[in-house]
Every structure is written in C-alpha cells, then in structure tokens.
Image (tube, rainbow, N blue to C red; front, top):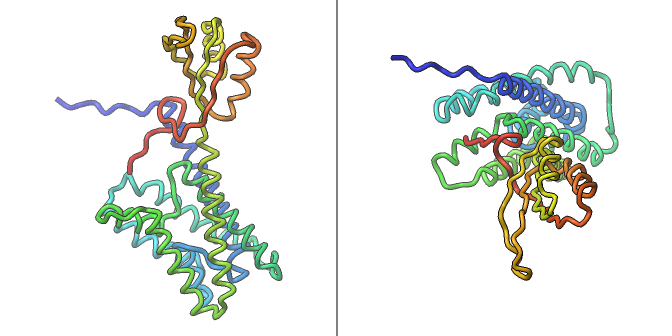
Length: 296
C-alpha cells in the first residue's frame, strides 16, 4: 500500500514564493553594492565575489562569469556532501545574482560614483552588500561561496561556521594586495568586511525580533480576547499565586513581534490601566506565526 504524499498547503506555497522573491531582492541589493560602489573603486570583499574581483582586476575577465564558475563547482560538491535540501535556495541565489550582475553593470556603464571618495564608496557598498545578504539569509537563502565551504568543513570538523568564513575572507582580502599593490585598498577591504557583517546582523535580527509579555490583571479574559482578535496572537493563561498576598491570580503569557508591542500595550491600557505588565526580548521564537525551525 502506497503512502499518499501530502500536498503543500496554500500558506506554505505563498511563504515559499515570498522567500524566493526576497532572495531575488537581496541579490539585487548585493549586486548594486558590489558592482556600482566596490568594484569600480578597487575595493575587494570576502568570499567568491572577492575572488571574482581579484580576477577582474588582474585579467579584465567579467566578474559574473568567475563568480558563477566557482559557485558551480562548489554547489556540485555541496550537492554530493550536503544534499539538495541545503542547496536549492542557494542555487537560486547564485543564478539570480549572476543574471543581475550583467544587468546592473550594463545599466551602470559610464556612471562613476564616489570615485574620489573611496571610504564613502566602501561604507555605502558594504551596506548594500550586507543588507542584501541579510534579506537573503532571512529567507533561508545565501550567495553561496564561502558559506558552502564553511558548511562542508563544519560537517566533518569541529570548527564553527563563522570562524571558517572569517578565515576565508581574511585570506581573500589580503590576497588582493598582489594585484592592487596598495595596502590602503586592503584596509578598505577589511572595513568593508566589518560593515557588511554589522549590517547583515542588523537586518537579520530586526526581521526576527520578538518579545514576550507576562500580564497580570483581573480583566484577563477581556484582554486575552482582544489580543486574540488583533494582533492575532495566542494567549496562555497561567495559574499563579502572589507570595506576599497569598492570593491566586491569572497570569497571561503572550509572544509577539516587537512591532506589535504598542498595539498590545494600548489594548491593556484601555481595558485595565492598573494591570501589571512585564515585557522582555527573546532570542528566537519558532512555531506558527513566527519563524520556522531550520536545520541544515
């Protein structure tokens, strides 16, 4: 007897489609930062884009072809060692960025931005790159490259992903000196790496910031019902006892997105201004209405 394969729900299809759209947006942002601001100003970056930049400065060979060729071999290796599930969105990201690199370079032909201000080009370009990677990461995608190398090494050796990526990026950026013959450009490369990492963290963390509430009120039923209706968040009632008074109370536990905090506070204030409320940030929330557990 064959087991029926469950069909994906409409919500999961919409969520997957949204992920691919956001990965494409992230790749466009990354392409703008790399080819409009960093590459024309001889500022390298980490990963495969850094290798592609060095090859371009040395030979004039277009960056999109080098980027695609290196990622092609890395993805073949990843497919063999890590499986298709790990690679599918990375494959989409690599193809999308390769396509838009050509488009962006054609559109930017003859345009020279911040040519005499390398530091500003470094800051703006790195911000675009970090923001683009952050948008892609938030949708469980990536630009490939050193991410794949790190995942493979991490599978067989007890070395963290971040350390592998950092070592690879430092080697690539330092290697740009042999082509550019300018230590100042190498320093700009390390500044780019730092800014890119900082912006990446800000984008990823802001997209996933959640808060938790503990609410004690005699009008807990009315408050809970309103939170259920809008902003459509679940409420868990916990039986508690006040240590000082010895009185039994009902305590509500609520998880919500940080942006929904003002709505919840307004509801509580309108219903029971004397309610006791505790709000705190949480590192991550996984489940219905929040992030989905992702294991690579």
